[in-house]
Length: 253
Image (cartoon, rainbow, N blue to C red; front, side, top):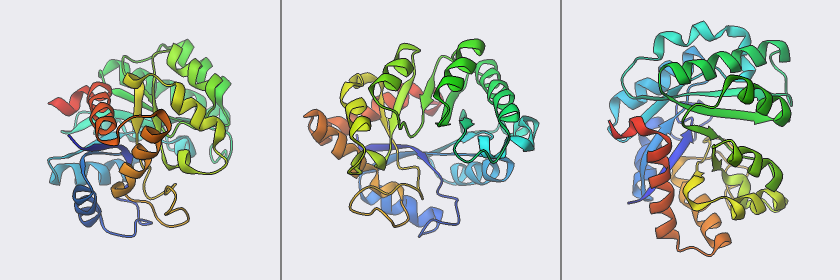
């Protein structure tokens, strides 16, 4: 069993290669499954198009906090499409605040409700907004399967997420020199709650930092964490893929 990239945007125009070539490059690098992410109506449609053409690709549909002003109703028509395995990415982003906070928060809450109603995995984006993220989750109640995508916190935030039952998904940031607390979080995360992702085309790991990322690099992320934890990389690929299948139960169907 090879790697699973639990979060990539291979339909993005910043990708160095087209979707099909990117997927093949990743397969050649030992990646066996991909979850392609929707962030608004346009990218939800694009993610579903990729998933419809590849047996090893699934899609999520969501409204990113940057796009919260578009309204959650804009993504609802995609929920029952084939190969949809999650709601997101959704959440709160107080770093850029492209949408006002008083619009981000209800949009996040609505998508939590959708995940619970349709028994879909929730994929969360949170940046500079930990307290409000936890407050909304606590108020709405956690879906059965919840992923903190591109986890960027330290040990305290990791424990708060884990205590609520979330999976932590780590990206190429874990290879960055200054990501000391993030690596501490990767070390303490239980082996059955850890996921790996690329967030392609963003956040390419060292030694590719500064260039467009791609799913073929998810093994670099996973190997870095395996080395950090003292695990064999091949075994870590098996374990994190098993976690991905648990976190996204619809991938089995």
